[in-house]
Length: 78
Image (cartoon, rainbow, N blue to C red; front, top):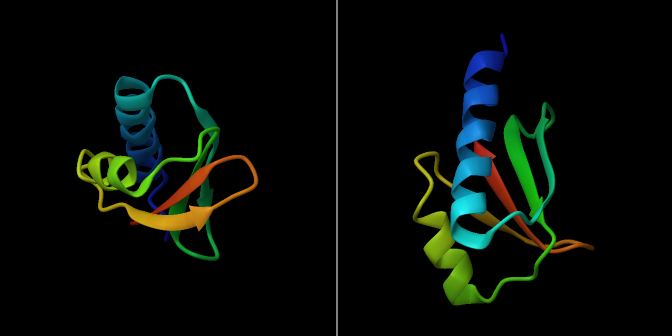
């Protein structure tokens, strides 16, 4: 069973961290049932050092998921 409350709280936290660290630059933030994960794509392409620094600020483990059409992508497995 999907815990939607956990997903929504996690998305709120992700948005808060990104906004504080980088400003408003979220292109897409959604839950993927196929991956059982929250996917994040930014409107910016980040360098490796910035990706690492951003990942360390989330309480939910974040993984770099490559570069998308619009910017850097992250995945949060929950």
